[in-house]
Image (cartoon, rainbow, N blue to C red; front, top):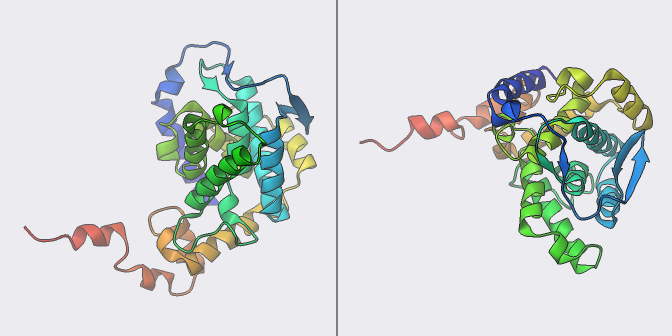
Length: 267
């Protein structure tokens, strides 16, 4: 997973020069509709609303054990980061919960949510949007509680969570969702916020074991490089294709960004 270290290092450089690092210290302002409903999982206080419970169940229904434990840890790490943040930012814990829980729907082990032609991050973002709209239609949530602004925050947080050079410049919730996800790979060493401790890491891991995360993720990404390679040519997944998938490099010729530039129309 060395490629992730390079991504995180790049994101940290970007973040240090962004507006978040210059924010005035102050208490975090938690937005959302109802903060009175909470529960504790693995020692972490998280929102306990109908849509959060529905999102957790939906994630469970569309994930193998490795993926489900990963999204749960990512959610809990993000919740810890949000609870300790001293930036004057507005965070909606319910939106964060839905985004974190559903961020890997594009890995859906049933195949129902996986498209033949979209990046897994986009598949996940679209599936999460559809989940929210279905939750409105079935009465789990009210339409006035989930306007387009909240839905787009979920969409962006999921679609951009593997792209640190973009998510570092997005809304704080988008960044903090990605920070929680990143923290799951190397604990405090990959926590972009610097707020996760090793005690946090081991406590959450005990509740949701890793189940060989590294090899599981590698297998999933290699599957995308093999089965829908066009979705991997412009992002980190290409490295898996080059290293592990037969004929990937040869088949990519003519489909890369460099090909678009070098084969541009003449003057």
